[in-house]
Every structure is written in structure tokens, then in C-alpha cells.
Image 1 (spheres, rainbow, N blue to C red):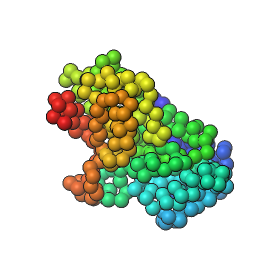
Image 2: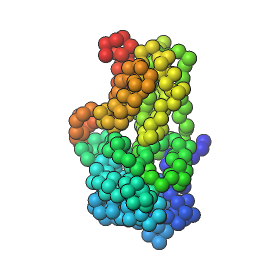
Image 3: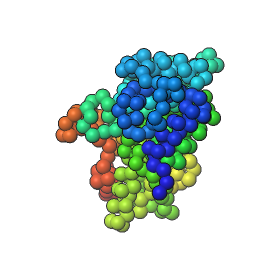
Image 4: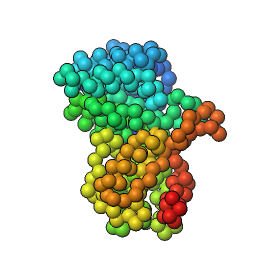
Length: 304
């Protein structure tokens, strides 16, 4: 068995600090399990910088490092906290290359999770950066995808928003597209929904349906490949974009792009349009395999 996503991230951070002589900023980096075991045991003298519990101010430290050409890694332990530091990242880091011809490359490790953790911390929020110039968004769920994301960042001068998910950390397998010559339906999953979409596909296949699954790694820029467009056009009942962000964000935007390009109806599934609570009964979770199966059947039976 190869390395897990957790081990891959840990090694990337080690290389970035020790060999690239860069810096890693974040809250509680060394104090609480090295962020799920994704950080090497390095300290301030090595470039591992513990910052205060002040997300607005921390964004300023990271932007300053980026403007100095340090190419910092910024660990945001919960994606929901991104709302606090987004203004300074968007208004300075994302715009500086275009306005002042001064690049500000930052590798933002924005970490999603869910499971009764309340209204602020949970789920993914990559839609926050989707419409802003100067940023790129990628959501790696496998070891090779994460290495690819880091390598792309090191060749680029934009802000890279890495939409991580804690549930992917134990994964050591790569995810592969399944494209049938002719299919009933095509799933386009993003982030952690990629794993449950695969489970849903297997359930539907056992019931006699032909289901494509086309994994979405890049969120921005979103490139609708010709092969994917052809697969969607050959899907009798269209397709569906799945996300663990709110349905009205990235999922709806990508679905709209697909529908224009392929002239096929593309549905969406994501978080409900409501605030999550701490109790399991009030949680707001990504689509389960069972929910995906149910919605696909409703679409195929032309009830949606």
C-alpha cells in the first residue's frame, strides 16, 4: 500500500520548509496533533509559525510573507474560518499581481470536516474564492492529486486555495473516472462527495443502470474537457454535480457551464441552504450514497 493523503501532505510540508526554506503559518499547528498528523514535527526555527487565535490578523501575516516571495503555506484548520481572513487575502494577495505587478503566491490548506461541529467550523467553503480573480481552487482527495496540486503551485504565482477534507486523510487509493460508451446518467462529484458518489454508482450499477462518474479535481479554472462533454451528451438522462459546499455555489456554477456546453440538463446536490447546528439532528451534511441513488432514480423516472 502506498502513502496516504495524510503522509503525502506531511512530506510536502517538510520539503517546503526544509528544502525550499519557506514558512508555514496557522493556529494550533503543534498543539493539537499536528493538524491531524499532516505536519512534520518542526518548530519556529524551521519555519513552522504558530499564530494567534485571530484569523483577521493572521491573514495579514500570510499576505506579507507572500508579497516578500516566501510562498508560504497557510493552514486554516476549519474552512468556515476562511470567512474571517478572506477579505485581506482577496483584496491584497489575489489582486496584487494584476494591480501592482507584484505576485503574492500562497498555498492555502483550507480543511473541511463535518459531523455535529456547529454553524461556523464545518463543511467546505470553496465557493467563497470561486469568483475572485487571482485565485485558483483545487480539491485533491488522493496522494497523487495532492502532489500534483503542490507542484502546480510551485510553478505558478497565484493564490492556491486547496480545498482539503479530513475524511480523505486516510485514503491511499487513486480515484478513476468511469465512462461508458452509452450511459443512463453521469455523476460529477467534487471534494469528499467523490467517495460517496462512487458508492452510489456501484449501487445503481447493481440495479441495472449505466452510470458514468467523472471526478472533479479542479474547481477554478473549471475546464469542461471534450471527453466529458461527449460522455454527458451520451447520457440519456443528463448528469449531476455533487459538492460538500452549499448547492447554490460551485455546484450550480459548474452545472450551468456544463448545460450550456453540452445542451443536457445537469442537476446539483450539496449542502442544504441552512445553518448547521451542534446536535446531529440539526447537522448539515453532504449527500450520502443513499440520497444520491434516490435522486438519480427520481431524475431517471422523470419525477424531477
